[in-house]
Length: 236
Image (cartoon, rainbow, N blue to C red; front, side):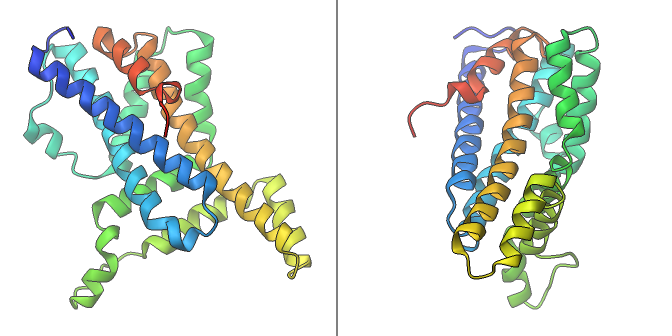
């Protein structure tokens, strides 16, 4: 495959990374939507989504650099990002906002939807903290070097607290707490929370892919937009 400003080896590496990001995001959101018990699925979800979003962001920033300077960032430049999804999120949103300033109302609308989504920031906080150190939170405590921030469970709960503020989910919470023995109401509540979290992941993921499809990330970004889009996910 020919991709502008990349030799054959790097072009194939880009394709592999796009496939990796897409599949991690696809499986991660699938597990969120189908999880029966979050306690048994939280770590698999956080592992897949933290890596998937990190790859998605680094690909976006790499393609932006490729379009601007005709060169992909070096390993050292990419390593400077670390696993800090909070900073990467800010950089990606700022870059895409500039690059879509004259795009269609549809593209700008997708960006606005992500910016208005109250769940996105706590989602990125949760995934970012897990990617940076949260995956070893309890190992570090066992090693007598406890981390100075909250556990992954607490980050997840903070995200769920934001989800619970949405009217239809707040209503489901009220119904469940008023009938504590009604398992169907509790299942509906947990399903609603999980669906809302997965919706935010897919909203962010789709927006970035559509920006690529609509030439916001240069010629190579157009390929990225089609390859990484949720609609490109095959059989799972």
